[in-house]
Length: 572
Ligand code: DGT
Ligand code: CA
Ligand code: CA
Ligand code: ZN
Image: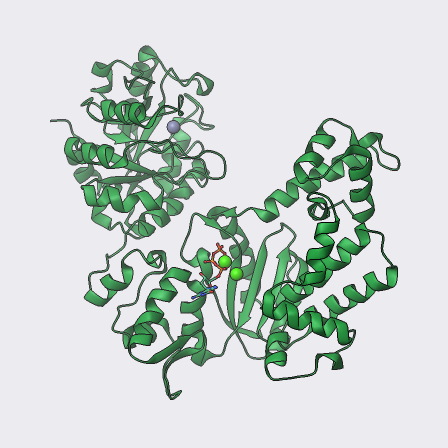
């Protein structure tokens, strides 16, 4: 148990006492205790375990010390539970909303019957809050803003957002001269699709100075705890960041431990335990405390008879066994990508012209770009009918003929209609270089209907690739339900590629589907689905997914050079 968690319990007690409008001195004594505890450099748990006297600490008397012991043992405390029971509904939760204090929470409850966050949102939206004494339209808006913020804080962020924070924090850490070395661990290093919090590991010349320098970063909003081992902050954006200090001799062990995943750690530690060794964030050692490794991950894995495992694979999905047998995949790299196979222009819902997109792809060193605008069913995007597509394809061919350094492929993203038919004439589709088929409507069909719908597209004989195959939007829309095994088998049989769509909120095919598709013999594309030239840079997010899905260079079509690509997609 961390000091911050103990302090949080005391702060919660103080909050609830405030809701009850209890004695101010009692409230303050809990707050003072919380402040002392979160400012300690040593862990309370360690002090207690060594039999230290907690009452020697400022603001901690007999009864508070007893509560600390209770919290350390049980994770909570009786007094907090009692207070919770004395108050109705989720009233205490209301105070987590920025802009809502104990007094206003009580007022909202008494006068509007607001007992939960949901009640509060509704009351604001129905403009009932502004009618209350001492509140107004501005307060109401503040509360709504606070609710939005709260959702952001309690939610996870997309990998892309995390990457922006890491970029900015990383540049800052590079400028801190007391920071000798830093690394991001956690789900970010594993390149997971969403990230809870950021975990930085630091080696410092002097931890105190390094902490000062790190905390000077402009984006840091609140320092939640500060200590010799760890400092935790919340950025202005609400994102939580942990900075942990390690010495060089332990850095590899720390990196291994804090990269996780937890399941991977457990699987690796099991190998150590089988040898009667000990593995933790400080190193690998014999039970007699003789150090075996700790400086690098390679050395630790090596001692355990394992090859170094790329972080993207550390999910306990068979990687430990593969590392023992020497059969880990040689994962695809961003530099392996030679072109992009899904992009849009201002012919439909893209923001830029054909020329602009072609130039941008060429600037990225690509050998080819497929232009895949929408078909007519996607009317919100201004989708094309047959005539328009014919003329558009001519324009693509014409521009292609005038470009020396990049090959433009004539293509389309044809909508798969509800019954599995394609939204454009198949004889026209057969004339194009590259046909992506995707679902954009009617996503709530039964699994059986959805499977038939996808199978019809796969078997059409004119489709090269299934675009954003599950249609999920991270945090917004669940994947469609379909029999993935059957669809993947059909794709393998009919030579239909499966797209890994690299849009940051799609990442579709999701990584947890990739292994199944791979085992079925499916081949993949990684495409950005760019709607403007800067979207072409999403490619690396797609590569992240592919790596987490165990894909190698040869599993991905657009790692081929242009001649080989054309050879592969040419219709027989
Ligand atoms: P997140 O932050 O929810 O996106 O996911 P992670 O994986 O970054 O998780 P986090 O930040 O809670 O912890 C970082 C790593 O530390 C985690 O991946 C594995 C390691 N770790 C944390 N707690 C435990 C634990 O109880 N046991 C083991 N074996 N490892 C843990
Ligand atoms: Ca984390
Ligand atoms: Ca963490
Ligand atoms: Zn689409």
